[in-house]
Image 1 (spheres, one colour):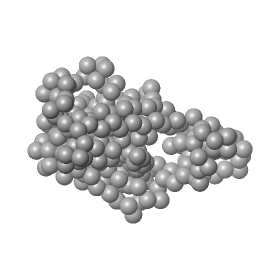
Image 2 (cartoon, rainbow, N blue to C red):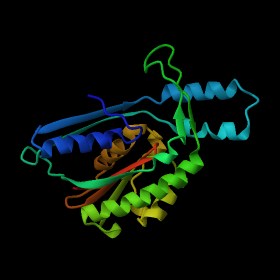
Image 3 (cartoon, rainbow, N blue to C red):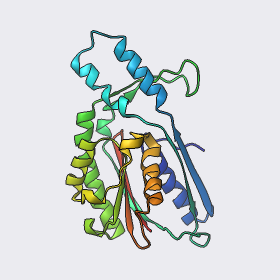
Image 4 (cartoon, rainbow, N blue to C red):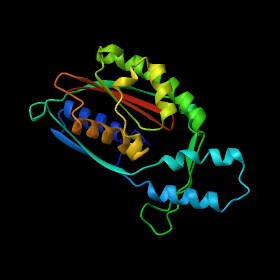
Length: 233
């Protein structure tokens, strides 16, 4: 079945599957996501080129669309008795600030993959960055209490990938050491719901986590919504 929540879809899916495992409804669940940024980038460029009378603000609202990338991920969650890796998902916390639901809006879609699919997105990136980081700060404070962590306890941080200014403000707001960040923005851009989990996968491949490390998964999505989870490696 489908779970969609902008850039938090995979994390929401992880929580849903984890709850089903804890309730004894299932013993294992696979969450998958694929993001194809090409059509949005192409449509945005064509729209900008075809409108020479655009104002500065109209152009600014398209900037975020030009950072979109493509990625696909799979996350397998199992009951601890079935686990061969022993990387427990410890818990987390989610918050919403839905008064800002209009900061990122897309046009009506005719369906991904259809010949007439021409997605467009308008984003107030500056307001989203500031209000998103405020929401993230509240969410992180609550998540730390649930997990029993302090910011200093965190070994590595994996965030939804948006931009360098966003990352700087986020770490300042949360009181986290930016040296603990693992970034894929430079190679993947913002790949939507696949962004954070694919960043975690790249980090694992690079060997940045060792047994016993505490990994913070910090999700922020339009809506505005934030979901932050803790994993022990």
